[in-house]
Length: 230
Image (cartoon, rainbow, N blue to C red):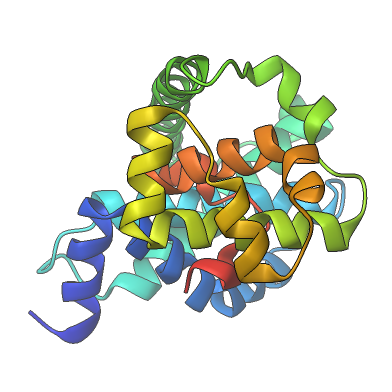
């Protein structure tokens, strides 16, 4: 295997390595978004779709089927174009195809895209179900996450650092996962903050720690914390 193929194989098995790979290739993902002129959709929506497709490509790619990045670029482009067409609701206005061969090619491509989207949807539904179950042990619900998310960016970034520190330190991670207790006092001392600050954001910190320490690559990819877990 070449170096990238090794990293792709590792990312398929390791949530943290998947996050690092997505963070490292974010310039590539953004570049493909800019290259595909789907102006009807918001940039953030297009970027979210592209990140999802990139992750799906990592999971589906196998060495020997060509270079990975061109494969991912084509998949991102096709998916964005497809979503743009759906967004505009103008499929009926598309020009007729010139030949049966053209029609067959388009139908085959549409079938593959639909299959890929079904896979992605099923993948996320499974992740969400598992995350909801994992959070329930801490008295946290998915529906309540938006209410406990800090409003200020600085506070969110601090919570990410606290969550990352928790799962990187075996003793603190074991305390959280086995005893269902966040080591608030130790975290406060390490970061030079008050225990009240940690307590205020305890549930949010726990939720982030659970996501990062579990097998939730799809959900993790959309969290604003890629740089923190590198």
